[in-house]
Image (cartoon, rainbow, N blue to C red; front, side, top):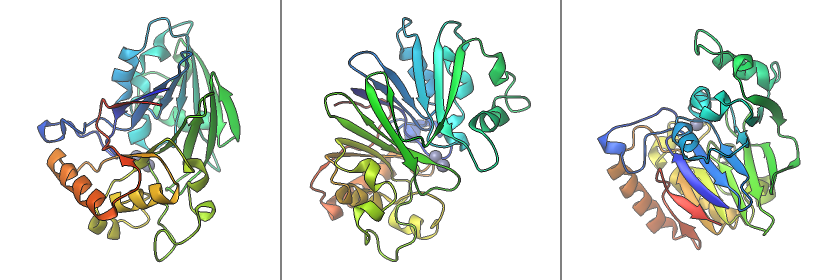
Length: 280
Ligand SMILES: [Zn+2]
Ligand SMILES: [Zn+2]
C-alpha cells in the first residue's frame, strides 16, 4: 500500500510561512492499495488536494473518520468525489449515544454551516457506523475500536493481503489514567491492540512534555508519550502526527530532535510532514 500524508496539523488549519514544511492542513491521510482500493483516513482540510490527486477512473472511495471533531471533517464538503454522479462514497465513522452517524454529519453538512445538505449530493453515499469489528474494504482488512479521546473516537488498523499493517491513531491520549506511562501492559492500554507490531504507526504527538501537563484530559499525547507508545506496541516505524497549531517548523525540528535523542527508540521515526509518502 502507498500511504500519503495530505494533512498533518491538529485542531486548526495553520497555513503560513512558519508551517510550510510540516504543513498547515488538518488530518487527512490517503491509502492506495496495489489493486487500486482507495481509503481516505479523516476528512480534514488536506482532503481537497487528495481528491485532486485521484485518478478520474476511481469509482469507489471509502472515507474512514476517526471522530467528528471539526479538524477531522472540515474538508468533507469540499471532497470532489461527493459531487460526481456514478461514484460510490462510503463514509465510516462513530455514532454517539444519542445521534446516528448520519445525524451527526448532517449537523455540519447543512445550513447555516454548509450550503449543501448531505442528501443533495449527487454521488452514491453509504454510511457505516464504527467500531464494527473487522471488515473487508476492497483488498484491505480494516479493524476499528474505541480509543481514549473526548467523544466517541476510534483508531484504525489496516492490513493488506501481504501482511503489511498501518495503524492510524491521530487523536489519542493513552497516558490518561495511570500515574506513570506506560505502566500497564499493552493489552490494557488504549490503542494497544490496534497498534501491536504495526509496520507503520501514525500517532498523535500534539504536545511537548510541559504542554501536556497543562492539557491532561484534552485527548492528545506528548511526543515523548507517542514514542513510548510505539515501543510498547512494538511498531517498526512511527510517524508523529497532529502537530499543535502553535508549533512552527523550527519548533517541531527541535522537539523531534530532543525527544528522539532522549527516547532512543529501537524503531524508525519519521516526522509527519505534509506530502510525505510511505510504501508498505
Ligand atoms: Zn484532531
Ligand atoms: Zn479530536
